[in-house]
Length: 172
Ligand code: PNS
Image (tube, rainbow, N blue to C red; front, side, top):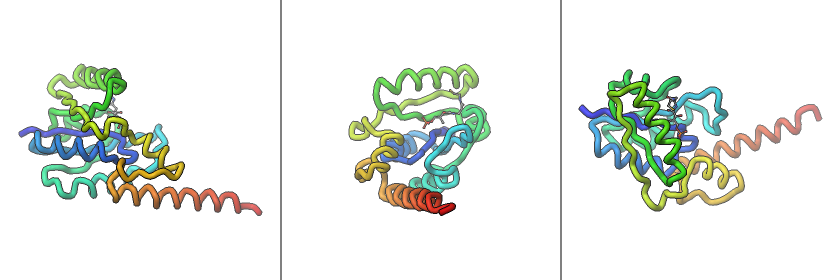
């Protein structure tokens, strides 16, 4: 049985992620979309929110499931019985980091191989950081994220800006 892990920060989940998930789910028996719980890195969405997003995004893919991990990816992959790691590759700029990560993972777990999926051409420029920047300045992210994620971005932005307003009012 071919079990794969597709790891990432998914902060936020983009159409690029959706594309990689859809295509890689067809290549394996089971795909675990795993979000990294990294307390050292400040994220826009909480871990729980990102898990909800992933679950919503994979609800129509019967062989995909959501998971969360902290620590080493290869330890999580072993725990899941996965021998494949899936990563999407956009441009040459991704390559060095991805290659280093794949080799590091291979050196720690020889039985686990990384498979790179070349991104769909229309998602070449897309990244979670770009989405956060565009949305923060009021830009349109319709062609970057699924509608559910767009509404989540709007909800979170409203929440953050009302919290900022509350802080400004504090002590007046
Ligand atoms: O979406 P991202 O931020 O590019 O995903 C990066 C991720 C989560 C795949 C990577 O940071 C990771 O695997 N972290 C877990 C720690 C680990 O295993 N490091 C060793 C490989 S470099």
